[in-house]
Image 1 (tube, rainbow, N blue to C red):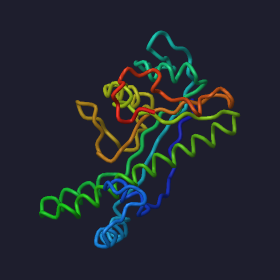
Image 2: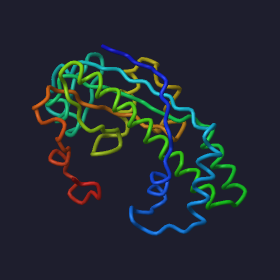
Image 3: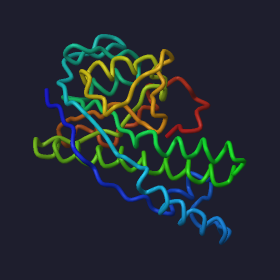
Length: 224
């Protein structure tokens, strides 16, 4: 088992924030929105406190829809299919802290709904950047061992029960980047992401594997 907790520096880019606001690439964006996005990216930079933790475990065996990774078990067709294809797995949690979330609430209370939406989008883009940085770090570690990595998957998506968050956090044995779970297995701070990344030898097809073949939700908007 390898446990890692390192500092990550990120930079929030305007296109990512605009995407979270619903502006697709190539769509004309009002100058006022662009100006507000740029201003809030700068103003909130000190509120973003990237933290992360991940642990790498052996994917020991899969029985039915249950995957066994040492002292934790994950249940569900998608995660079981992923672990059947994996030799190891990185279990992770990332967050940008709660300061920016507090700023969003304050703006909303003041009736500044547009500003609140933009700051919230900055937070979403920042969180995604931290998750991407952790994925890149896992990819480096895997590559040094001749392994490739899968896409990352999180409880609550792809028919993976949100209650499996408890196992994700148990796997990290308290090294959860300052994130806590509510009784409903939601993460606090809200701008946090957790999940799993499979690791397998190059050529096994894991890097291009899609979970949709194991998922029964045919009407899912994210279906690949």
